[in-house]
View 1 (cartoon, helix red, strand yellow):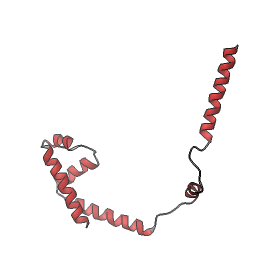
View 2: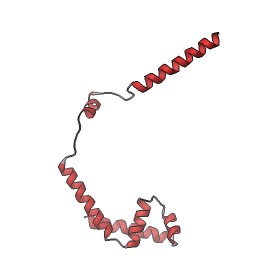
View 3: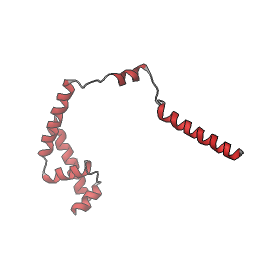
View 4: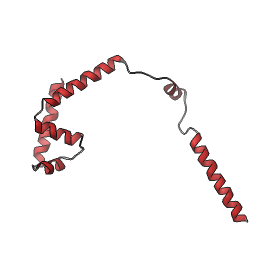
Length: 113
């Protein structure tokens, strides 16, 4: 009887803690965090235009790279492959891929100025 009572109490306690955990805010509520939640802050038009121009410039700069540089750059940054993996995939040396990606980044930086 004592064990059953204890088990029931333990289950009720766990149930209560789960309810509390689901329904109580676990982050610090300050006036600043409440204001951030209450008000939608749209992006400024200047920021939107600036981002659009930068994206366009980047796209144009990438399109001016050689096909090999463009492919390796995409595999490295978007495919998340290492230089070694790209070299193995293309059947070339690690240094060739490394130089190609670095040259591509240098060209992009130059074209973005």
